[in-house]
Length: 552
Ligand SMILES: [Zn+2]
Image (cartoon, rainbow, N blue to C red; front, side, top):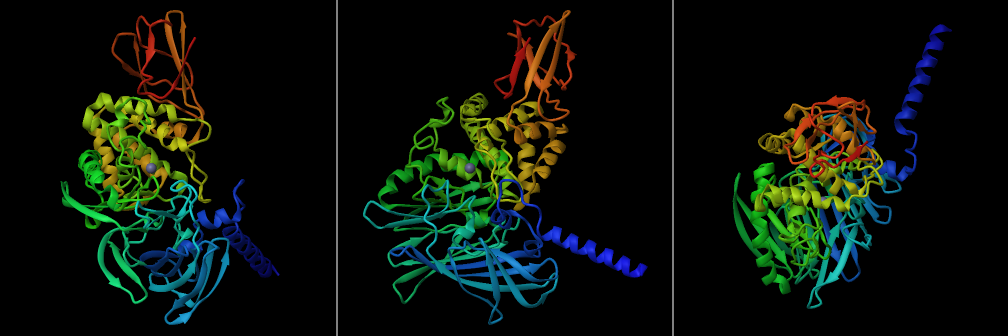
């Protein structure tokens, strides 16, 4: 009887545990579809993707695609079923395993495949998904996702994909989670004769098919994000150059519409090498020498497609001809070349495991713009640029998104994140150390996917300062901290008003006209040592510190 009771309890506990493991309570405001897309369930962690061969034919007239993706993986646990992702509007023709069709089920944009027998941990195996359909046409790329169909000046097709956020599974079958990057990939894209396709990596060859199509076979030798895998089709003109960089010779290849060739030669020459020079100095070697660096003209503004950066800024300086900083510094260079290429380090080399942490991509890349300005026009110019971008901050929603539901945080991940990083540099107060931290991040997390904690811990360790509450306040809360200052009985008292418990950010203060000194208040009023300070002459460095001030 007792034994029976024990067994019942064990059974009950294990049933409850399994139920809990498989169906977690929904995250408020998000759907089951969001969880299927964003959550790392055992059906996704049971395999590690090693290699894809994506082979797709693009029928431009019908806006229809068909083809297959070959998955090679290593099992990380024993399993019989796995999940990959493909949008529900795309048809699965069949899924093949060792010459036999596998059974599968679909729910929202997830596909659950069952293998005939258990695949054991550490085993390498493969399957192939054949599919077709009319992929989503993006309405506002690159802000939404899908295919963009356009035409060049002579009426020839000009087609591209962009799918950050919504996900690569909008057009191809893949394990659509940022935590798992394929180690290498072949991208074969067949296009109507007379057009070219430019994808990521290096062109291995082309093959004339019998049906009026030509196949372009590209090979990516490095790990790559799903959303970076791109199609770019046009009657491209091509020119090339080389850059003598930290790791040797980096090939530069440019693919542009024929009518823009002259403009492109000027714009790319003026921007690309200075950009590489600045970023290799601050962040370390370009992370994908094996795959080369490319700019590919696209019928949308731009996207950080790894080793094949999409460019659509109209060969103008600034952001579509505008200066996002309002300081004048932003009009001296091409925003899309600099920003999207900055992502090769932050986004492509170092990738956030969960897109809730997209600030790891966008805050650092936004900040990279000011380092580019600094490298060309001096430190003062760079600081003015980053300060100028504060005009773009909303402070309406936190920068951090919700985990495990494929949710990006707010647009403040750009300008507010960039200002946060400039402030952290100011706190560290040692530019050599700051540079070593930025380079160290790219070396330590080379070709890896990372978490919030890992990045913050690395910067804490590298700087010798505990900056966790600073990151937490700026990333997880809407409000910026306010430095409250009181003058009582000849004393100057300071404290922080902040959301994060124990917030104790160092900040620079001075008496007007004097030199700045660091103080480190907490959230309780304490006296600071600033002889002669009054309500009228007290000043905090609000140029470099993005904070509020309340003087009483
Ligand atoms: Zn970006």
